[in-house]
Length: 507
Image 1 (tube, helix red, strand yellow):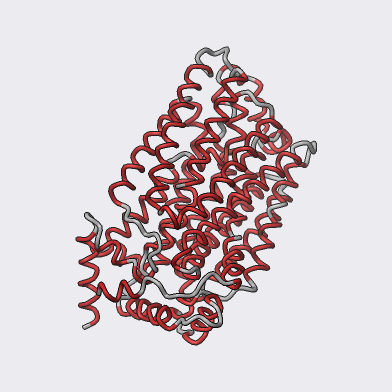
Image 2: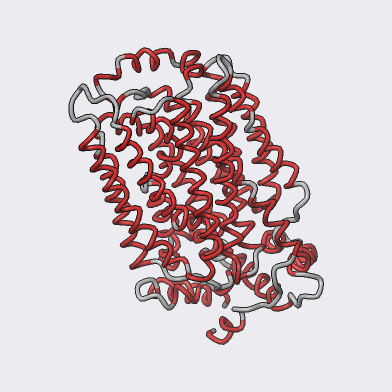
């Protein structure tokens, strides 16, 4: 067993033009998720959008001097944002089952088409019902593409550079956020219908995905799983290079898929077994901790948060552009370092910096915003300090949890539960995002500055969890990943049970 694992550690073959182009096309699925994250917060604070659909919020803002934290506390307004996430959570579970029949490439294509339809609904909306229907279509598109794309990248990329290639999904996600926030900055100046332009421009990244998905093959593992062995070998040869010897890697893929078929009791049922306990914990823990860093609501509602601090609409969006650009730079740096310094180092360093920033932001808000009913805005110097701290926080997350949330889950699961694990983790993440985006404004209104202490507590917990329970997976081939868990001080007891179960099923 040990010898076989060591032999599987380096299949040979380098980074080819084919694997780069194929992975970039798959990673571009992050554009639609990122665009939606960026566009929503900007649109929900535009005067023209609020006047048309949420006039009660505009009336409430005129009386917001009573409490700066409660300007945008409206459940119907937050439902416009949160409906996407609950639709995505359900869609990701559906996609995990459908992908075994049609493959990852088809799922990405379908997701892009649904997102395209949703963007048309939102741009042409004349009432709240049309807005919500459009958001649901967008959510299904996000659920499909986000379930398939990270796994596509992990299964296609060379093991030595898998972290960098999988992190490309998050790079495109942040690029989408930057593009959306920049679009909001300019469309906010268009009186009456600027919000339609912002929402309609979501069709651009959706079209990129639909067209791109038509030109990429499915992954070798997905093709083998569906019985297309010859196509799988041709696909592997294409991405590894015409001169590469793919025999060893292809045999390991075949072996892993055959073991998955022998043990095919139902992927979701298997995840509940003792031998898969470590996978189930990570399925739940990683997306849960990521969402409870507060980054989701900060990314979505950053323009609203900056309006709370006293910025006007244009400056609030401009500050959000600065945040997303900082995030983009950090993610690019992370993609070049993740396969050198490892996953654990980035998790721990990023978590520590995020914790310090959130405590500092809470202290400034506690001292300089909302201490009296008259304090409706913050002094400019302190507001600039909050923006600077949020930039450091965003950079820390961009180096660590931002990209690693996609990298680690896409690589740690064995093939028999890989789609189910990714789908369940994504469903947990999107469900939490739904809950947070729905209640965040109410929480901000009720907890005020303490909302950042709430998130700081979760960052402390997740950093300790990573230090104790996540093994290093840098450079380990997917087919050899079980050995990593078998060596971990805590998870080895469960990994050994999984090995014994597999041996029994082989008899």
